Length: 172
Image (cartoon, rainbow, N blue to C red):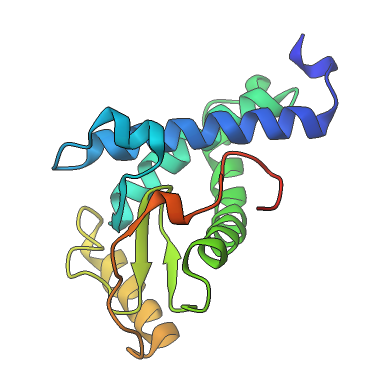
């Protein structure tokens, strides 16, 4: 079975698969067409994201990641899996988004990733919290505004070629 491979190998493979899933899902979710060659060449545009789009795809890919990497994950009760993934999700997103943002945006510490191809900055697009319950959206917006204090410039569009190969765990 795949669980006889060393854990680090399973982590690398699971992360690559998760990134591919996120890339495909997010690009297919876009309102405008992205040319397949732009995807292959890594020249697709990094666009502002929404809370719902970023979370739905990431949570799904993290469930796949858990099944691929951790023996026994598939044996958990169906209702328990989302709890484990959600707990991991918060830590993973902060670490991964920060690492990738440093590589992609350099000195612009006001910018980060909300998804694999989706960006975010302190100006928060007006539709960032679309698709989630109003009470949650108000609280989330309050927390984000407290954190960012509105001091940031809007996100600039960048191409994926400005980002390191995030499908590996190796430094750029």
